[in-house]
Image (cartoon, rainbow, N blue to C red; front, side, top):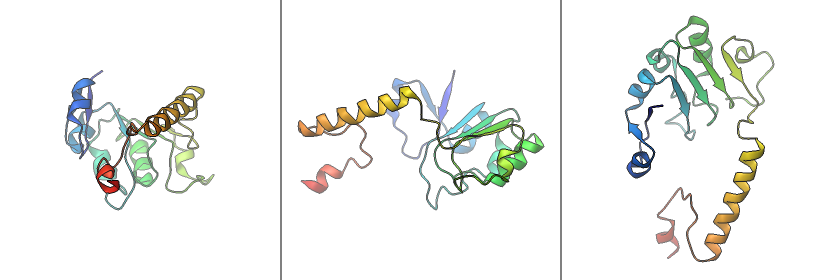
Length: 158
């Protein structure tokens, strides 16, 4: 599999170690067979995946959102799947949760909607606990946690 990614804070070392190519968002959308979203929701990312961006995707591409509801314009996804603009979508997060029973996301062939449980496997839960314990041990021993969102925090507390 060839992996391409867009990230405004692209980690070149990680990408190189995992054979990931850097691309701009619109290029990722136009080239990828599967588009998976892994980002936060704020004013800059709300409806980031809208009708215009869905139109860039291949007509057999699959959109996967396990990040945050609101990143994807849900009405545009329904329209895109129904019109064959994209091949389908798998959504685990929604703008409104729980998703209303009458939502077209639940009644459109080609859209898989799950109840915000994509990471609720036995393996994922076990790994989450192990990672948390490893981070606590590291910090108590004077080290840094493994996944720091703000690496400058050390300067803030020094």
